Image (cartoon, rainbow over all chains, first blue to last red; front, side):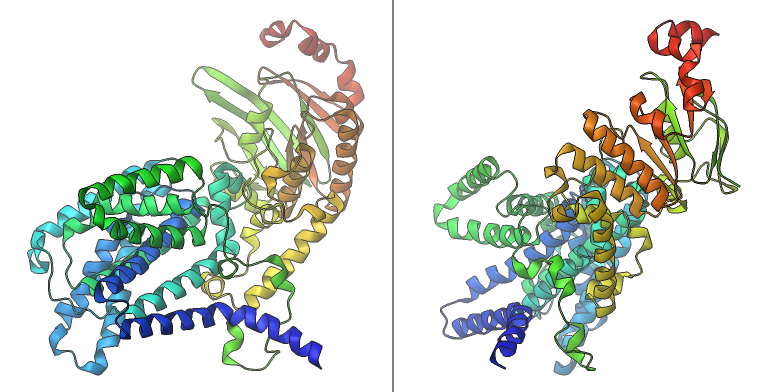
Length: 344
Length: 259
């Protein structure tokens, strides 16, 4: 009896361990916040780190797993940010939303932001991804600047001054929920026929084509999924900061995400998490250096690229973000019971 | 019933007619070899038969259906698969994933079930995994299933390309120099393997090769190409004795082109 017990405990723990870890992490952070060991400023840095993880992980899908080169990812973020903010502050007037409706409105806003970004992603992805090569890089570079310029011109959403009074719904709970959910979905996607098709295109587009993979379709799919996630991340960003302006989503921001991606390790979800979190925190930690901090930041990046050109975590994944082949042959944990958890 | 009918296939790159009036009628389970000196246009023929190049003129019909103008992936989905002269594996993916990637078009899982990793999706994945392992087993790649493709020795990479091509479930397999760079014993093994695959999978095979001791024992028919033109055709014995072929290989090639 005891041995069977131990056997069933182990996969259970392995399966729900990461979830348990997330809950413990959340509770610890909330307790530390309550005790004011984590002050408001630390908290905000953590929220931005979460948004940046979403941005970097989605960029990783396009650049790291599908082998395309998108350099205007902040453009999708701005579309999502404005899309979501328009829903929560203009369609529904934020200060008159009843308490109970706040969360549904917030989630609707994020969804709309994501959809807007994904549609625009399809519009620019379809013509440029039909071609092989670096066209996407040029098109996305231009796209990022065009979006910024257009947003500056639209007066109802604040034009160049930006949009204020966005409710700060995106607290630590929502950010963490979206990060964990997105990483889980992306992991599932990467270890499916879709993910294999993406990786095949990255590794050898001609061979992928010759093996019956509709490369254009999969490239567009990868690009739109990434745009959607970036849109949601933008929506979260708007609801962390309560204020957005077109110029905060310029090329510099897109370049930041490229840096997070390649410093962390492209083609590794763990790398995206590590890259985004470390490099969001690093400039804040270096603040005591005043004007010298960006110099040191750059030096650290150069050192990373020199000594670990594949990125800090290049080519590796933590167990939660990896699915081993052997897991295909494991017995399902809950038998054939009609259990809501069995699809987990 | 002929499975593949290729008629008057030609392609022109600027002023160069790389392949001129190529004809091929391939029967079911037949093995045809295309030989010829370097630069004769053999790989160009393959690139047209797999949709990478669009022919300037001529027709390609697979079981009566015209394929000209389709994209490479559509050629593969209709049943023409290939290996490459310079190996093109998915080098940063594992051996087993390389083969699974070639089954993408047969996948029954949609985006939602893949994102949620439903139980049905896991079941499909398990079935695929078992199928691929049973394919890797006879190719001596089963124990290397989890290695990265780029870390395999050369001979294994060649066999992996073969396994990958088979996974698309082809009717016709095109092998572009399958024994290039191999030593004699490896060449013999590959010849046995090609014969076995042809029998087990009931495939028609077209292969390009330079090694006559590889081609001659296994080919039903041989076509000899030089400067884009077919200069000889027939059973291996006939072709080997054709003076035009000997001339093309041993010298005087340009006179043939003018002839």
